[in-house]
Image (cartoon, rainbow, N blue to C red; front, top):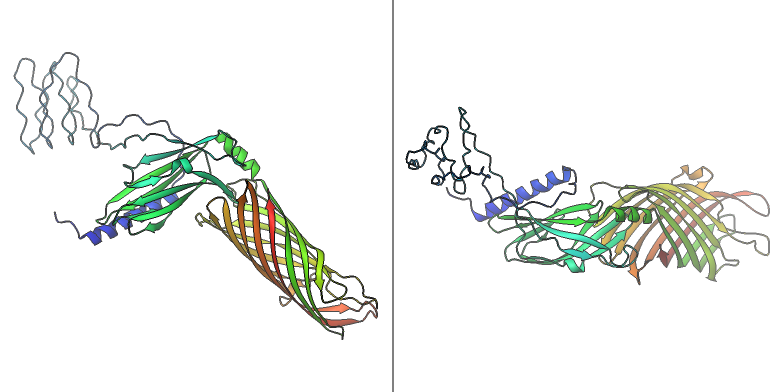
Length: 468
């Protein structure tokens, strides 16, 4: 039979791998199973042992059905030629046949008056693989001496030239839960490597970090290698974790709290009623935030944050202004996004106000008690060594009371955050940029007259936070 060209075989192999990944995504996670027993030879079915004391007949040739032994006292029959049917079962009292050669089904001795048994279906069983153990790193996730197990399981054989640094594996966390990070090295010319549904190497050489989410006491992941002629090798990586640790991790992740301090630069412009304000100000801003997730497997979370201007460092306007803001949000992790990425959609409520003392003449400036809904999508990427990068966008129509129905009065903001571990503590550095635009009717504090005012405010904040 003529084989297809190598390029066609390579394409067929990738189609098979893609189909396998699609099937795995629909399958339920496997449960922990007992240690596998020693398997039979690949492609053969186990035979029933012969009766004690009886001689075995000569095995049939490869590819032919085994002959039934002759009656007692008669010479053994010569094996049938290739492609001929097996001989008729012998009478009662004959000896059992010896198991057939590899690739043929062994015959079972027939009972008195019964028809010959139907050959068993061959089953291929992979060889068991040693179970190396790894000590989890000490720190907030594990006490010293705790261990997890990382297994390399042949499926049906290990990926050649793939080296896993099991001893250097690390357990990290982010807002969605815990992950095992495992460094891998692959060096095999003309072979491709696929991990987490993506091609990570096409030239046969790559160093990468495998990120495996820990969601139960047994977590499985597969890595694929495809050869230049369409050969496929699949290896399964299994992470075993005692159940008692899962409860501990879940309890630790119920609340995520943070407190921080940032340096803020503000430009504030207010035009209307002859009392125009053009202010530039720098200040220190304090922020407190909290996020609650009832379970590490849950896609839902809720939380809030509070910020307040603590101290004005400089201001072109006298008196200087202070700002207060409160956010309350409910979030949902968008399904179908694979690690190391996570996309969350949050909605909630926003409140902000300015605190400005009266001038010497009794006048003042600024807005008061603005509120409205908000949408707040967040994109997060998990990095190595317990680091994450995240970015957000915020849109909140605001107004006095229910005046937020006018979408022209709104606050737009976006920001970036880098979360990292330093001396076993979690810290983050964040950059936030915001713009507030308002068209309001304000009341003069001196005359009581109502007049239209246009407000435009821009701010940039750079700060750090401590998480626990």
